[in-house]
Length: 230
Image (cartoon, rainbow, N blue to C red; front, side, top):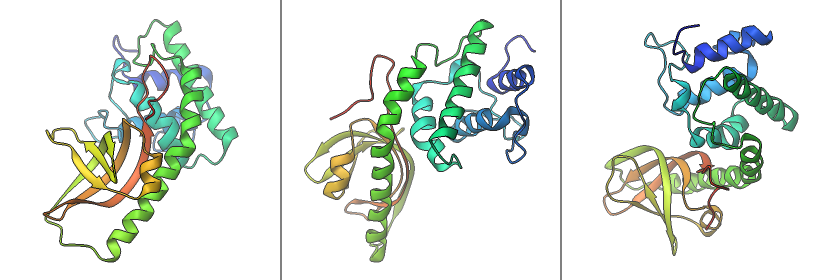
């Protein structure tokens, strides 16, 4: 193993050392089912991948952080062929075992300050809310698109809820100095929490921003405690 191995090299070494069964349906079959899912989630979250375009993250272990864990547990697993609680638990156990293996080898990583088991309990408790919020927002886009106004610009990516006021959510977006104000239904507003991360496509109709598409939702997770609430 190289002096400063990346996450993929470490996952590959772990899978070989522990005799992990390959997952023939995965783009990274050598990692096995669970670590292939983790690798795919980290790439989807924007961590670097191999320069030649291979479906393998080139990120270093210290580049993962608690937001990636929240995304993996709450948003990624339910949408990526994990069929039930037993399979989810096995996936999370396999990831936990990989983290402990790294620590035994003296490899520092970005989840080292996280109580993994407590974090999984906290995040799992929030999963139903986030899935319902994602579903309601997706339904809301259908209502908008029944009679869409002219759109002059769109913004796509993960937005962060920074305020709820009246019928509006105020959302921050990386690189934008001003918050986006989005009018939504009461059921959506009642489920949304401050610092939730929302995968959205917003459209600018000149006089207001409207919701065009909605995807994954997951809460921010801080090492000091539970996901934030209102």
